[in-house]
Image (cartoon, rainbow, N blue to C red; front, side):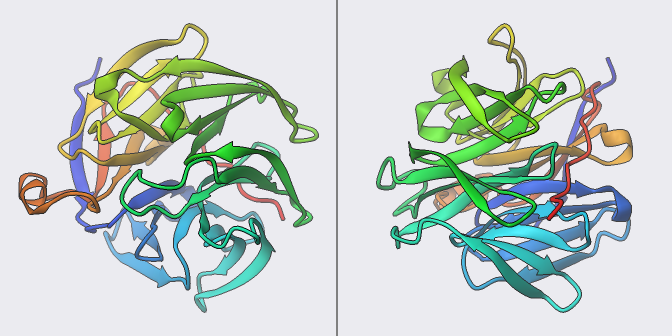
Length: 299
C-alpha cells in the first residue's frame, strides 16, 4: 500500500464547493461554488483558475461531447460556452416550485445528464422537506422525471457494468441503488445499500472506482468513505482537515488521484480559524485505486 497524502491544492474559499469533474484534455478540474453562482476551472499544471459567474446558483457541471460544458443553474439545464462565458438554456424543471433549485448532477454512461432538485435552504441542511425530484436531460434535450418527494438530491453514479444506478437523497442518510437500463435510462427497484453511521453525518457527493466501490463525501463528517455496495460494508475512511466535505471525483494521471470539494458556509468564526482551508480543493494521492473518466453529455 502506497502512503496516502492529503493536500489542499487550491485555497478557493468556496462558500459551497461542489461537483468536481476532471477534464483530461486540459489536465484541469472543473467545480462549482453553488451560492456564489460560479463555475470554476483549475489548471493543475499552471495552477491558474478561471471563473464564470452565472445568474443563479450553479450546482453541477459536466463535460459536453460537442465542446464546452453543461451545468445546472437554478432550475435550468444549461449549455456553457467557456470562451465567451455565455449560457444557453436547454430545459427548465420545477416551474411551479419557485423556491427550488437544482443540486448535484452527473452524466450517465449513455450521455444523459441526471440531476435532482431541492428547496432552497434557510441554513445548511435546513429546508422544506420533500420538495425535490430527480430528472434527466436526454441528448435530444427532452427531460424525464423519475420521482419526487426528494429532500436534498445529491450524489449519483453508475456501476461498472452499467446495470445499477447509485443515488443519495442526503437526509435519508442512505446510499441507494436502482436497477438501471442503459438503453432507455429507466430506473427501478430502489433499495438501500448503505446506511450512514452517526459520526459519518450527512452523505453528499459520490463517485465510483474501477473496482466498483463507492466513495461518498460526508458533509459535517470531514471525511470520504469507501463502501462496498454489494456487501453494505464500509471499507475505508479518509479524514480531511475540514468538516464540510461535499463531493469527490477521481482525476489526474490515470485517474489515480482523488479531488474533494468542501464548504465554508455554516462555519462560525471559530470554525474558520480552526479550518483555514475550508472551501478549498483537496487532492488525495496514494489511495491505491483508480477512478474512471467522467462521461460527457452527448446532446
